[in-house]
Length: 267
Image 1 (cartoon, rainbow, N blue to C red):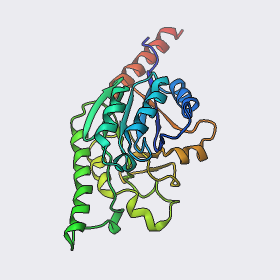
Image 2: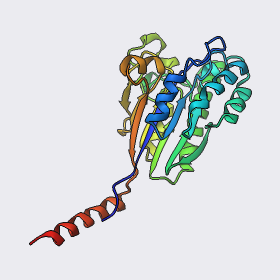
Image 3: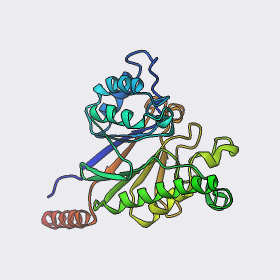
């Protein structure tokens, strides 16, 4: 009889907002707990507070405790000082794989990621009408959605996880002030998630939103902003998703094996 199904534990958190003035070791307890609880770590943007290389270097030292593969996207705070390339390079040298319209495979799971952008949700989403600056704003959201679609299209894995900073659905930003909903995410990011099979979506940015929701097609979406995780899961302030790596063919074979075992032991 075949061995039990393999489970891969994906730990996810966003919005670390690491500041260069933070005392050394601030994140050590959290990262040590993640290292023990997960097989893969996903970081959903806003890794630094002001997007400064000094903050990235300090965070890289904190990340030394993490021994599991780590994938990440940048957030809006990581762009604040227009040094996002250096921030990414420093943290990349520390072992973090960054996704920006890219994809990667870890332990059989395909990861696709982009930062995403704002614009609002559903029928209230901002449209490309009027001033050029409005059209440019909407174009940025469209471009991020296209990058996400491209990265998902390159994956051939049965299990796929999308990594974002901005929210792709309204459900996980509810709880924030209604006035800032348009700045927390955009429905355009949801469109690629409906065109490709996706196991789950992680995002951050909405510090006081809801921890989970679903796309129109039923894909689970998890808001893993650190402040929200601390509120919802104070004993373990990050999300752990257990991904069952069995394929439909594996499940059919396992069912056959179980039935053969039953027949063998029948009197």
